[in-house]
Length: 378
Image (cartoon, rainbow, N blue to C red; front, side):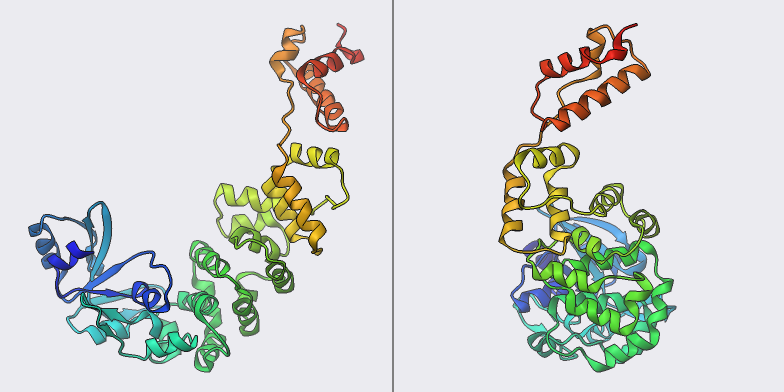
């Protein structure tokens, strides 16, 4: 950061970095704002021997690379026109004007190189008391970008305490249909951030009360989600979404455009838990032969049950090595079975025998079992 400030001494840190610094949270990304036009920012940066990448010149953003780390520097802006999804902006040198276009007071603060914080709308006090409040009129801010409805719940989940801001809740309730204009990717991105909060349940309850949750996730099971959090389950957005989800996991994954890995995991979690604390090692090995330990443990978390016995079951699964069926097609071909449908049938039959035996038979035992199958004779 020192190199950026050396090139742009008038720049300030803005947004989330200031908020998290004041909240005592880990600062993930540092973004800067500058009253200089982007062309002058680039010229200053290059003159200082740093790399300047024009990542978003139309919106005034330049990425400055210092010691291998990229920092976004955005020229101060004001909105010229908004339509609920996109904004046409013009550059300005007025810090307050730029801050006034931001969504929440806690995100509208800026800090200078010497640590002076500029707070035009009471964000510091709001952060201290756990209040998430829109800058200016809540309805106007939402009308500029309907994603701010979901962002409100994201920041409420992380920073909110006590009763939510009444004006914000009323505006969200009145304008909630606007979330229908958002892409599936934007909705899923915000929902993952909401579900990453230590306890997102108050925010989800508020989403339900305002009618937003029914629009983005019809039939969401908030009570199941609350039970999952109460049990101390890991902070995992996919696990929590599996708890919330009511209905076809495949249809949901397609509609929300989940990644292939997310889709497969959600589908696996949709299968109910079949394990019990009293199950022996054979039952656990059979389960592990079908699914990895992480999936089985997640299914246990999603079950309605809780208690020390279930915790011990999860620990057993964590410690147990996953069994792998030792027989392969090449082993059967070496025994004289030609490639084709018959080979697949034999593999399935022997694997079922291996599973019934608790998944402990080695490759030699599996070969012997294959040789006993009556249909192997020509």
